[in-house]
Length: 524
Image (cartoon, helix red, strand yellow):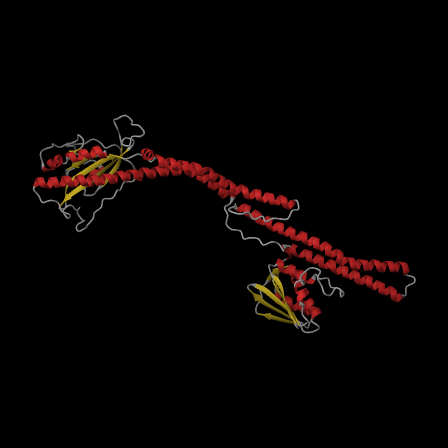
């Protein structure tokens, strides 16, 4: 029997493996571009978050000073809430910037100015001037407090009185909501060194936070800071970056080797095993271990099956040659002996002696003919062609066959039988051999043939009431040339033919025997 083959599990094809390698190579630069974009956006968001926190502190300091100068009551939790948020415990300001929305050009110059007079707003701004200036020293931020009309009343720069109501972020704050933008940064200073953290950024983040008191807008805090560039961020995290780059350089050849190993190793193994099989060595399993390409897996399965078939066929040929030499030796010896005797003593023999020797020659010739005919039939079974397949209605075919063999055979059909698509000669040969076997060993008692559908297959049971099969012979009864009726002309090929037919139909044939009853079950 051929060795059992493992089922084919999913494996990537060679095309998929090569596509995977090329995809990784192609996606690396795209991944780097995406990484820098995400990093750039993250740095802008981080800068915006810092500006929000600082603008809240500056705004609260200015509001307290403003209310104190005007002689109004200090701010409370309810008085500072934006309109529409009354009763809420928290009103968080979340970063909103995203570089995918685009980057604005540099902030345009002010379109108008106002005279800076000693108003409560300006006086409050003067009180927090040191706070804003010191924040600029340590945080590198630009801070401006604007009145409700969007004009500067306190600044870390030299733009007091400039009106910024034409800027996008200020317009948003004047409408009562937090706003932020990203603008291209233009510096009038020479390009700084690579290690400079404050000057490497090309983008400047602007935020505008509205200030409220009792539901009305009293001012706006506009903050700005240059966002840290991805290059500077990577320089700051140089040790981690070096580790990542080193790890990538280490993994790249490992990945390349792994992919090439997946493709080449199984092919080398299959080639080596095929060479050893071609030189006549004991066949080894063609099944490669680990992850292999789908085409190589299918090739190994096909070679495994082919090797199993060739091994089985070689064993069969060896057994066939040995058995045939033994099986044919007896009739050939008998024929040659009878011919020699007839040639030497033909004249001296009586008619009765001559007829006896001629009869012996005829019997031996018939046995040889039966052997050859059985072997030819057995050899043709695995090679049936598709054009020999026909649709067979097994119920009627069984009745006709049993009627030809012996009208006394009882045929029992249980329900509707499945239609078979197979060589009709194989069907008839398989059933006929079982029926003939039952008639020979049934001692003249009734023989029953039962047919039934079983799991979409056809089950045929042939039952006789003979002496049964001995325990010793049950394990050998389906072997080629095994027979207990050699003297009666048995060839030992009938049940072997039945088993071969069942194998080609992915079926089976089994024996159940006890004293007084023997049953052969054929599944097709």
